[in-house]
Image 1 (cartoon, rainbow, N blue to C red):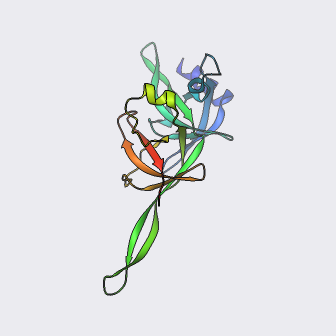
Image 2 (cartoon, rainbow, N blue to C red):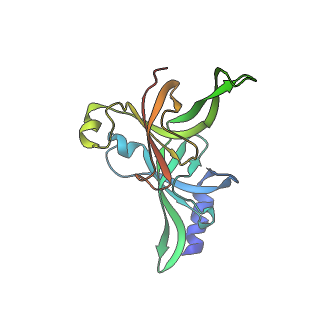
Length: 194
């Protein structure tokens, strides 16, 4: 069974790259979930079947020729007690996130002379959702100031108050959540006033 699954993915799958320090290049079978495609949640999610050798982890980004997906779930597919592939659920990356922080600049006497923006995250693929009234009713964890929520690969060094750019607009990072999807960073963003 393992060999059949390997051949099916290797022969019929589409080329993918998993973005990591040393990128993995291989094949995957990517399919939509069953259900109404008018449902935004279903429309942007995919089931991804990869070879075991990919060692896909939650939070990694899978890139195809035309789309990128953030992995929310990754688990081995087990048949008759044997792991034969990896099954993952991915969400479509519909934007990129760039985060900067102002770094104070001082003269030789230690006097503040200005601020210089320093990149914290540079153009990382993400899934961004604009917050509406219905979301506020169903998600009690949303802050009153939140206008956008983004899902992306966990990254170090980010702090509340950093300046984030999504869809070409500037936002302020108000909340950083690592618990909603372990391995994934969920940010709540508010309007940037600066």
